[in-house]
Image (tube, rainbow, N blue to C red; front, side, top):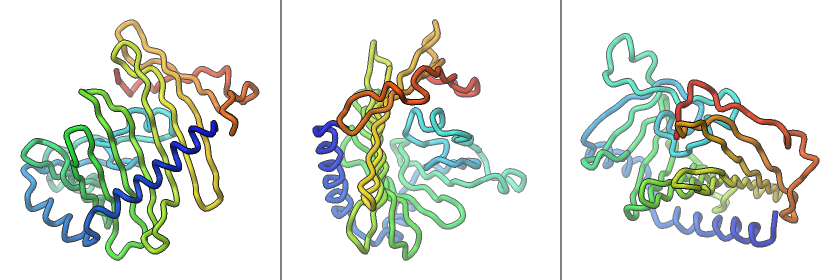
Length: 235
């Protein structure tokens, strides 16, 4: 990782920590308030990425093996109830306001401005929370950040950030940074995408970087071309 990238991620961790401390810590009361003010309720099926169907990342369900978003369930019936793992609450602008992650996790969504959404995922009496932030410019996602925060140690323990690069109004590559502060572990990987004639994501390859910012040309997957799963239709 280049020194400027190291500084960038370190500074972003500090910024994220400061942002977390801005919000009131009575998370459950805040959650109930958001639910009460919601306008629409939707349901989501099983998923293994945060927020399921509404995960802001455009690539997590592509680059993570066996990842799935799940699907929306419009109505809660006796038959569909057993498949529901998320309850999504939308505000009067049709934006996510709160999410119940069944059985015992809750998420509050905040909108500091029209370009940024931030979420705090927690359990009752939890010592750790998961903070997410998505930055949008127009209709284009610029970044997606997911950080675990230790409330007792008052520190970010895990950081994951996606930073999107665009060509002709469509994202062409994504720089992904990971950091685990418990053992000062850093990782920088770039995912480079190709599209078919209609603009759908088709394949991608991976570039791995050394700590000095140079590409690791001996990386085992350097020459490999990965197929975007056919079930994922994304532009």
